[in-house]
Length: 478
Image (cartoon, rainbow, N blue to C red):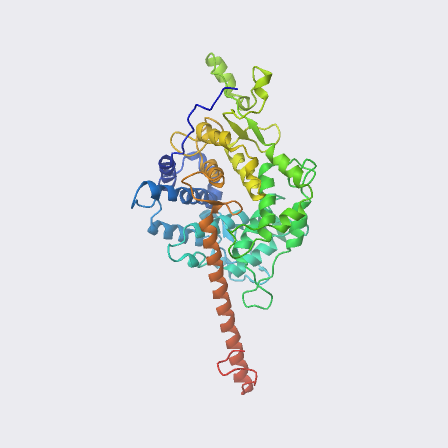
């Protein structure tokens, strides 16, 4: 393996990446995104989150620089997000999927029952998480507590609870099957378990039964049991213990468990998740499996002619499975130039898998097991595009999904100039603190509304009975 000690380390060109995200925000996306129209909320999250990860570096390089997302645009995006909230709970993923409000005239908020039409709109689990994240990311400076203003916390939590299946897993969306009742659709996917745990942490808080803001929780014990039962024989996580493990599923399983007992206040300070560290039956196997997702990326030799170039173009896996000319080149040494990650055994490298592996290991407190210097070189020299953003494979065009997760991988590993990242919520750490304040504000408003209703009930009773009970104080409180 060639010595890389004298080669300069690559630098993250923050201004170039900001220009890429500015183009994505202010210009129509290419036609290739048309198939993602139904996931517009996800596209918005990738863009907004990436800008927020990069913003501190921009403020350092340009004094008094105009923010990429100006306050007026922040408010417009927030209004757009809130317009996707469904009266039955949750958020729709795209404006074209928003259910007409008049369709809820017969909606019963407590049971989700409705006599004649399907409902409850087209709210789905991923869009709801992305919506809440965007609202927190774009909170008005100085009014972070108002980030969730307009969010129907109670209905969203009730809707979330109805998405849990008997085995503890979560689906994506509720559908009404004529003659059969409600059906939890969306398949069995560890991502939904993670998203449910994240939404619960963001909205529920530490609320006790009997308090005005209390909403019945979903069954966390069943969710934990379902997740833990999905660990495979080799230590990874999949949709079930009988399926092929996947790095993205491993990240979702680990993050979901860590969120279920995450403190609701000061959560960004170091804390240990007992559910995570005491529950996983094969922790050494999991750590070994995640660490084994790394492999040496070998440069392909340039094609000798046009025919060879065309032949290689038909096999995009070749560049990830080149065999070295000498057996000694297989040895792992400190002079490795590039290390890539895959999501499953014998699969090709992908930008996002560096994030899934890095995020999972950091959540386990084992981020040092990622061979970071050559992994960083791989991202910045092979995956970063010259116009900004990151591609899926080496040499590929950038897209908002891989561009966002290229940045999150760099941020979670401490890339200078980037915002510190919360490895479980996948937003900057400062945004996690915004979520704490925004949740507290929702709970205060819920408590105030509850006290008002209680006072109204007392006054109604007094009007009916004509006397004030002895236990009721002069101010009307208990």
